[in-house]
Length: 389
Image 1 (cartoon, rainbow, N blue to C red):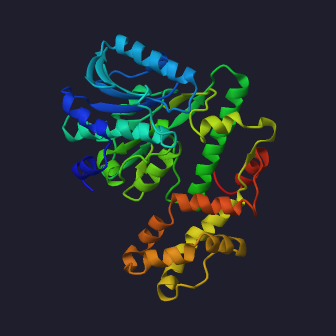
Image 2: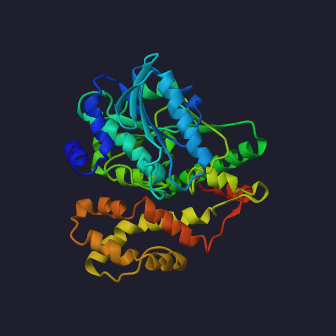
Image 3: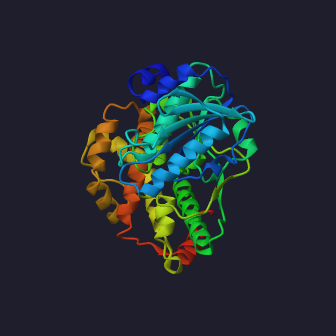
């Protein structure tokens, strides 16, 4: 799908704001914000960067959230000396950085509760894409981050191979001053790194981090996957899961994005809820055997696909527990349809496009009933014998 097709059929209404901006920028960074103070702009980079800030809320949130959102909008309008572009949209500049401020928190402009941050990111990215299409943004990568993240200056100017469709930047959680919260984030980051290391060792093409504050997407790839899904959480995972089927990802060797450890209930699942509910004394990590099972499946899938082309009821790869999980997921039937007419030279690609990051996660979750999570110290020690952490 071309950018023009996407903008004409699938973009949010705010994309038309691109017609009202006449500046030229090297970079564009999208930031959704809920219940954030105006100080969220303190770490923003200048360097000819346009920030698109989508202040958002939904009707079910507390009045204090809407009050904070309104205060932030008012303070930033004054700070950047903004001019109105449309109802709920303002533009201003300050110190070689520009702000497009979008209010989706005031009454009548709030987001549906179940669409939340996914829709907020989509709104911002759709405007960014329209600006790129009109030649107002030079760099093809549209950057996503969050209000609790600080970007290193080097991040916006990295060189990238032409076939790369997305960037997943290095990151680290930094202490916020509450020892319990800081420790919870340390353990959760350990889980994130452990999980991706396990996927990488198993040979998964989807062994990448899916963190909304640390990713950037090629403009054409963003249009091809029809933008961010309108979800209350997990929009980063689903976007990258689709984008990975279009081409490779890269992780630039730059200083890490610094994410501040803090309490947060802005989304129904993810870092905030995971760290809030954490029992730090009993924290567990997935059993390393899960990744052993996944490795067996991924190694066996291409050969099994050949058999499926001849016999759709052939036995899937892996040990009995894995075979049972694959059958319960409907993998034999689905994969047989996916590879039915695939020529030999495209078979492996077709297999891994169909058995994607979502199906990988579903398989691992099913296998947790057979190989339950263990205390993190035990899982780490056993994992060290299998894959580098």
